Amino acid sequence: MDIKKDEKKYIMQTYRRNNVVFVRGKGQYLWDAAGNKYLDFFAGISVCNAGHCNPAVVAAAQKQMGALMHTSNLYYTGPQVTLARELITRSMPGKVFFSNSGAEANECAIKLARKWGEFTGKYEIITFKNSFHGRTIATLSATGQEKFHAHFKPLLAGFKHAVLNSIDSVNQCISAKTAAILIEPIQGEGGVAAADVRFLKDLRVLCDKKRILLMFDEIQTGMGRTGNLFAWQTFRVRPDVFTLAKSLAGGLPIGATVVAAPYADTFVYGDHGSTFGGNPVSCAASLALLKFLTPSLLKRVKATGAYFIEQLGELKKRQSCIREVRGRGLMVGIELDFPGRDVVQFCQDNGVIINCTQDTVLRFLPPLVVTTADVDKVIDTVEGALVWAQSKK
Ligand SMILES: Cc1ncc(COP(=O)(O)O)c(C=O)c1O
Image (cartoon, rainbow, N blue to C red; front, top):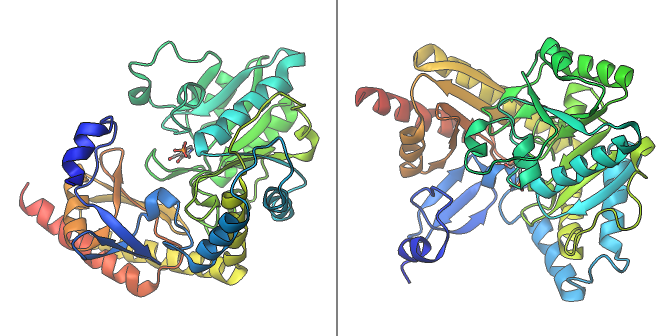
């Protein structure tokens, strides 16, 4: 079978795929069909935070698959309840709703905000320009990027997009109908753009004053990415609702909407549901992931991330095409003064997987197990790519 040819023939062409077929992964490494080894600094868009095929995650999923794979949510299952308890224990008093993806986790948060606001006539949700919240119609409407909206109008009513880090802009969007503010603590797809701590704290105060729900989309920033289990713990601003997906089950599909106690009983029987959400296999894998993300690993994420950002700062001094280096923990980006697509290809050709978003931002989301030696290799390869890309300009 010619995978690339058949992909064109049989799969709807919505993805511009990189020219490689991966067949195996272990830790921070991937292998292609020809046996070439790659150092992965993208982790499947921040999914394989515990490394590819993490042995503890694989063992937990396999064990659960041999016992019980699916029942639906019409029945009780142990792993789902245990996972909810563990997430709540590690975050804040409240309750969880499980789904299968990031978009679904945000969809649940949007529905929850609408139901919560129903009695006071509130349904509007403020999100931010350049944000990314998913591809369903509601989460697309929440997403603050026109390029994703084109062709799918009319979008869902009730979303306003404020400017990130501008409390004035948020104030201008607020009305008597505002039910919630939904924000990524660090915009991922939007170019690794962090919210200022001060801004998040101001949002917290504003939301308390105006009785608005503060909801964090932690789908990319969660599960240790910034050096704490959740980015709101790094920024020290507590949301009323936060959403998780991507790495939550260490590589299997899952989504979760975590809701603080005062709002946790907003939904009642029949208000929301999912056939697969919180299925035993994903939940068992997730419990193994949580065990793997020990305080010492998270401490290492902070240290390796700081080293990475420092080395990129040095690289910026040598390569003037780098406009800015930004990030927190192991969520890192560099903004170039030219499109980065060829740089990504050069790195791939030289055994390093990275990503480019917003045309000019190189994005690095490695598995959290990477070492400073891995960082050095990536810095070398990216520098080679930048020099090469400049030379052909
Ligand atoms: C911040 C954020 N929210 C939501 C999503 C959507 O998640 P999914 O693709 O699992 O629906 C993503 C995916 O990249 C994301 O980065």
